[in-house]
Length: 159
Figure (cartoon, rainbow, N blue to C red):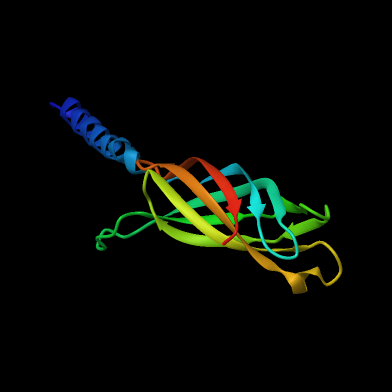
């Protein structure tokens, strides 16, 4: 009695190679959530005084998965956290608080300019009643093959 195990084994191996090749060949489209810390600084002008703002912004990127029936480019949801950023009044030396956190949906591109406004107010009782806006501008870079956020720079200015 003759068995066909060598043929069966070859078929199984070919199927495994094809499956792994499909998985590995598609790895260039793997989706990566990522995070970077970006130094941020600049001056917000206005009354009652200019405020020098500095600190570290934490930016998290989540690649949005789009089904194959949609003909849209891939997008990223950016979460920008400014809780580790503060300010100092240029004339009084007063401490200013920044409590900004924002989320924005952007098309996935190699480099992107993202701007958000944030509240800035004196760190004193009732200081939030005299809040004003600052503008944070981020130039972010991405690996478009994986969607990973790879770096960035940031500045603060007056909106």
